[in-house]
Length: 96
Image 1 (cartoon, rainbow, N blue to C red):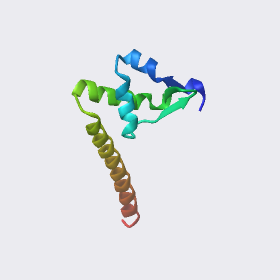
Image 2 (cartoon, rainbow, N blue to C red):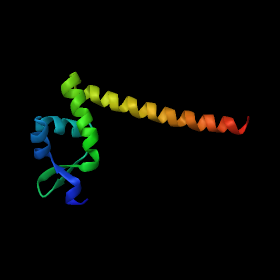
Image 3 (tube, rainbow, N blue to C red):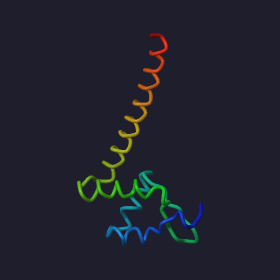
Image 4 (cartoon, rainbow, N blue to C red):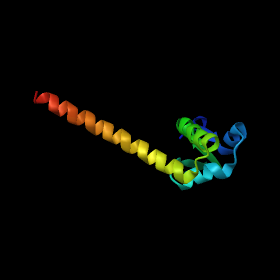
């Protein structure tokens, strides 16, 4: 992964005025991936939107990391069910 696609965790925490332990907790729950290069930890730029969304849920709504994990899993399940519904609808159209 190129260095310009990585955001240092320290810089991210400073910019958003958050504690680094929150980012570590997100990684422990498998909600984000942290890349380590030469003893420095980074978040991929592609994950920035998701990290910021999780930060808003946590800090603005007071949802703990366990709750964030549940929310992410439920959203993924809804997305999967929508895709399954679209597939089933398309199959039914073939028989009409």
